[in-house]
Image 1 (tube, rainbow, N blue to C red):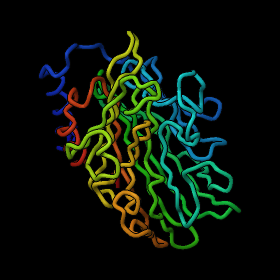
Image 2: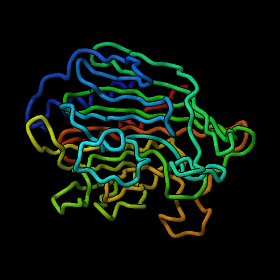
Image 3: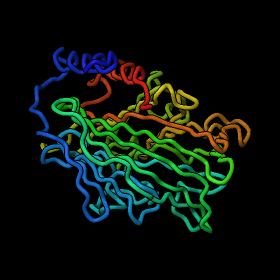
Image 4: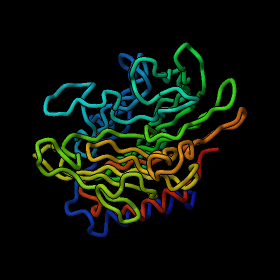
Length: 336
């Protein structure tokens, strides 16, 4: 661990683990990551515990489902992949965790309505395990094409997902995507329908259909709940009750927006029904500016890269040193 950034990140985790911020010391999650391909999905596990599955075959866009937090709890809605009852069946295109956009050269890659575009898997560039011991991580990387109605390819991307378990109380997913135009300029249009998104477990919703107590939202600027929608912030956290191994307990999901991302800090398309998305394009919707204000054009030969870190944690937003962990992440450089 020669990198100063890695040493700083490790120091944050160690200090948190030892300072008494955890109410209870818990055993490790198991020994070792694994990545196994089964029936058109890549299954990522840590020890004997499933972390997530990457779905890439015969889908409208690649996505991670399920997304399991500490104790193996479901942090994302299970429908439409599974029907376990008690969940709203709105927005069938919300598949756990994904990256897509509602206006790419005029084509809709966000929804799954008739005429919508598809993000089609081409190949894997990496799938396996890196490092050892506490530094061990699972890596899934792939190439994809964005194909609009009629078969026109408007863009391609390379994405990389890194899974880590820095402590027993936290699971971590790093997501990096580089987008390139194909056949001419790529205009990522001004719409709230995007972009890096998670559909959270039903019980985490800020507003629940049964009127019972749900979750809470907090961003890095101190804004809470409904006041976070359409606001800019370095990070955002959505925490609340989730069914755990011993009944309902508090868990949370935090997304960090890396400072190297275009238009950092991003706007947050975070809804009271459990949609949780970072969207740097929807300025017209978020700030009521003229249509097209949020358009971003990528010229041929150029590219855009976005990086995010997702923390799945026990407890609410105060149980994890989010600001310190964000500063550590912000100091990390992208891969060359």
